[in-house]
Image 1 (cartoon, rainbow, N blue to C red):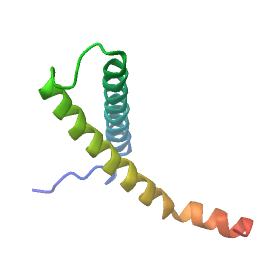
Image 2: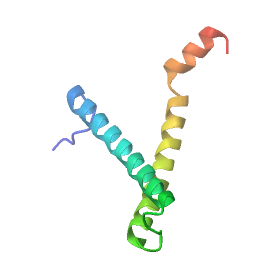
Image 3: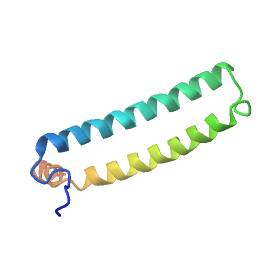
Length: 89
């Protein structure tokens, strides 16, 4: 039985997967920002909602790791490297 890999001849499936992934990270960033916003307003204390605080910290760490890996992947994009070489820097 063959395994289905996203992007192996299924461009619509790959595009859907990328879209869902991007939506997840956008929502995660929104949750983090909303938490910090309401915390700064004093709507609640971080000790009052311990489970939410832990969840947002974990989500924040995952988001930072994702952003770092994404930046590293984009830095190695051959099209960007070729464009830099063409411009001379």
